[in-house]
Image (cartoon, rainbow, N blue to C red):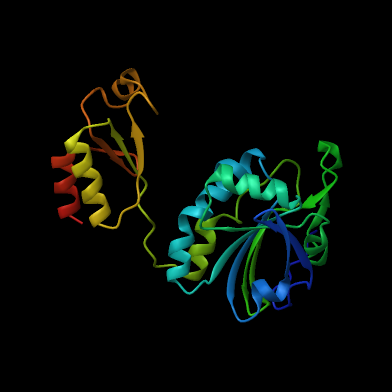
Length: 244
């Protein structure tokens, strides 16, 4: 049974990181002293749940966590600095600080180092998240120590719910566009003016006409989708934004 360490201080370790092709040692105090920090730790870089869900959602919600008084969001894994840097780049997770716990010192000090030898991983961190204030652990969300890879409570939404239960969640927005489309430019401008982040998919680069027809039954652009709902083109988007 993994122990909850709420009310205890974080381990004092040195993280060996790489910046601009140089080794840079970062201490626990460098990360936690005098700051409010959200940490999420996971079994390994480039692994399925970590890459598809855990990191992307924390990266998306980090700006909201910062608005609620968090200074930094940190991802820790028992991987070396080269792997963690490449994973951060591949994930485009610019909002999150990636820390390599290559020797497992931090995970061991947290009591979260577990054996993954059956997978050929050796010892890795269990999956958990925590809120740390000035080096003191206020809250932990620990996944159950069971078979498989449980992912039930250490997610970004659970952490945000704990910190700010009434905070609105960001909209999930995708805009299908094509190059040279003035209406597409207008739609993106409206979203920018409203302060709404969005993902843009460009015709013949990110999708084909067959794809957009399969999704919406139409081939015109732009096409805007928000939280799984088809909004329509730029005129419909203007109406939608006016109703917020």
